[in-house]
Length: 76
Image 1 (cartoon, helix red, strand yellow):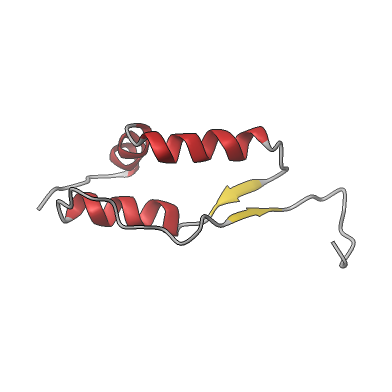
Image 2 (spheres, one colour):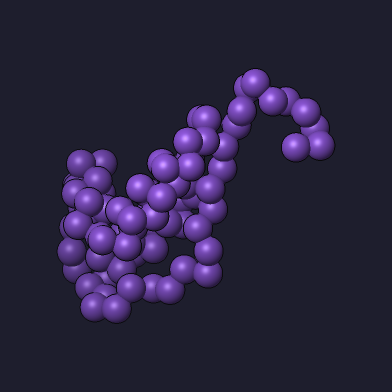
């Protein structure tokens, strides 16, 4: 079983995943304020790495969350 010893290892793992980096660039390009990508995006990658999977676990979606302090209208 593969080992990850900390956040730096997880960041390196993400940096080597072309698809995830493309997703992160796309989300960054949206220019959303206070923006986050949901944890399943990382969890699946770490799980696959730790278990030595050759094929990535499919993701049904990528959750993107943001907060715009300048627009607190409940309808938005």
